[in-house]
Image 1 (tube, rainbow, N blue to C red):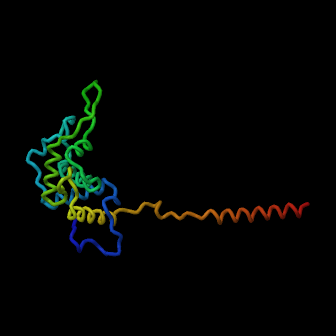
Image 2 (image 1 turned 60 degrees about the horizontal axis):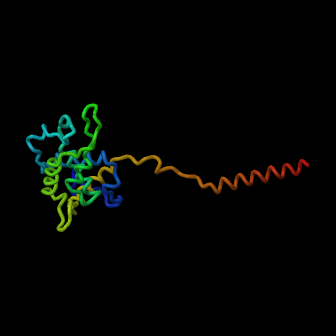
Length: 190
């Protein structure tokens, strides 16, 4: 995706934010942007990493690292102050041990920490003084909002936004007029 100011289209369109687009297409577009940008370095051992201790295998998608980074950037955008521990809870899941009960386990913190470092090097997220967690930077917010705006232009508008709702008062007045005609006919018949 091209995020230069010339690619932003006409200025008459309403600005869209990350909150205005569905998560799945946004994460996919942001992951493609990270991959094309070349600023993010994937570790050499990424194909062998499990994303959590309860997983049996590493992810099948070869671009999983970019997808996870895009998802983390979106989470930090929406919920500022997300740290490694909070993200480990978000990406955690149920650990299945055969016939024994499943229990919740957190995701691998090393992967999350490495991705947060990469995002901070790209100036998308940063730490604030005297606070915990990571926050979106103004540059990161601008990048994510430009991608969201491009997605809004591509996505179809749902049909229910264009529905016209008839006003009920007109219908009631027509029914009342019809009842008067029936009453007049009844009086004439007497």
